[in-house]
Length: 188
Image (cartoon, rainbow, N blue to C red; front, side):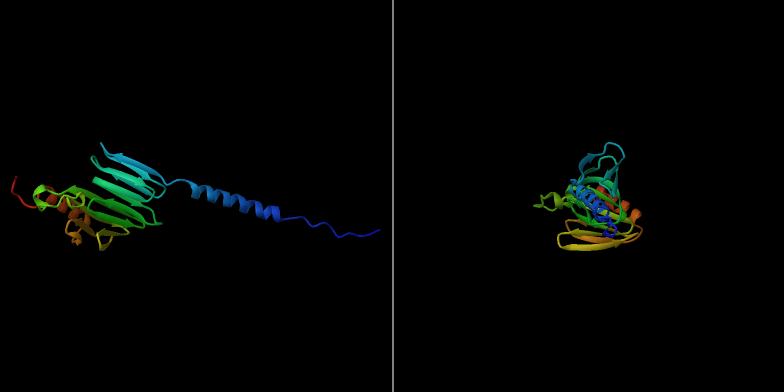
């Protein structure tokens, strides 16, 4: 009688199967389209923007998003963005790029007397104010770029993007009030 060695159990199905399942799940997640949407707030509303961002729109705010790209055409919006890839808010006056932070963006049309004759572009007839509460953001307009950290604020408009001084929340509210009034106390 011949003695045969014991049969070895094949273990490769137990190793390969879980890897195949994990790959299928990852491919399924990667194949999902980016979340898209649009909202115009009549009242204060909270909207999830994909998996890592939340926006709180104040009445009159308007946003449109596709994945991590948001277009905010008007109004006041507070954003909370979890760390990760680039997240950008585009406004008529400039862009705000973040990686993970809390910040607000306020978009205001400029007072007509502040727009010089011949400037008709929407990008030149709006101001955007950014206040950073946590983390870091970059504000940009054309080729200018300003890095902001918690407690800082900036303004973007036809004259570029510039850092403002002082407490960001108070500073941004003062700048918005100044822009809405036309910059002085003369009624028109």
